[in-house]
Length: 310
Image (cartoon, rainbow, N blue to C red):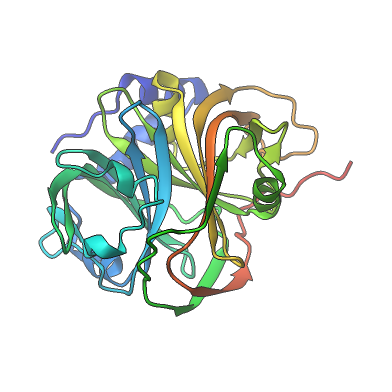
């Protein structure tokens, strides 16, 4: 399959001066999961996902299961072996799943800083599994991932009435999750195009709350593809999910993002790019996970920029 960047990606790559690098790096993008990545996918206990609601809002989430719940036996499809009874009704991505729905997936192993991205659409939604037909698949670089080891994973419980809270302005509990977060996952998509699930990492508190409805996040140098920024250049809608690894909660945010270029950065928060993005909140949801987990923090990414002391 010949891969082509869409106009938003090309525009952002050109503005960043990284078009040539992006073209070189795009050679890894195919329409199948390469043979060497299939065992990697099968051993994962977590995947990030991105979906679009009927009203156009984008949501990101994390799905969990015992290793083997994700499979790609022949490389053309992803099988998600999550029975209907274990699909959390409060999960904003599961709520959007139907035949032909687009879905972005990011398979990420925090302990080894490996990740692999797949974009596609729902081929089959069955009682015992969901099957995703793959449109794009490619590896991502290991930068900015804070290493964590999943020491224990409990069985997925059937939560008929999961504990959740939600709103349109962040409350103290949601702001506390943001204040400690060093990891987030983001859903974005171009109009009538694929959805992307991407990762962002930084030092604890790298997501700054400017108000109860607006956040500011630095953008570091990456693989030059600018899939997420390219999507946002055409469609500002996006979704975020921030895990609270200690409490076993997920904070989901849906809203719109604004790209900020050539910004003053006296503290060096962007690592020299001068790029930030700001997120305007439309709706948030805080939910407990249906799976008990025990995470061990290992170390921070060596690629994180070192802020300049004031």
